[in-house]
Length: 198
Image (tube, one colour):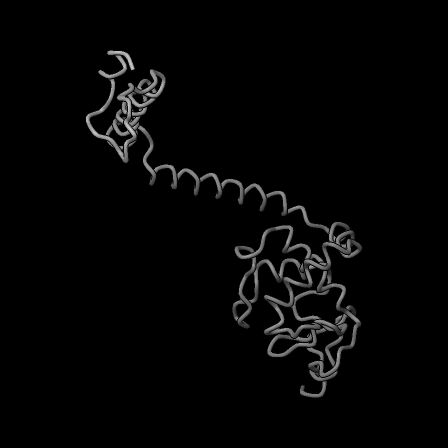
């Protein structure tokens, strides 16, 4: 070992193994100092200076989400009988709508629309309109005086439309243990139960 190698050895050894005191590679040193400088600039800009704070970024994200929701609601406002009828013929949409119906609506209307505490959805008598757009409006706005919450804030516009179309497919299915009819039929005639009670 020449003299220069001996000068580079550290003063200690491990089981006879000696170690050189080599300098770090230059790019490591530059990277280290660059991260120190970057962290100083980052803290100065985001935590002390004019940069957006975490709370500011959150508020901006909430504002953008509200704008997107408003756009979706505006485009969903163009619901028609034809659009809902097309959804009824879409197996994927109806499968998803049935899942939503069972998860969110079955507690009151039953898993087959037979009615539990909510009205029977399978007969030809309706309380709040019988067209698909009437069903859509009822689901969207709810019937607070009867305990049905508005679903417009809990379902996406596409989900709301699919559920309305699905409810339309329940008409005439005659599930077991269905509640008696309520409301009026398409000709405006009251349901048999309503006739008997009046």
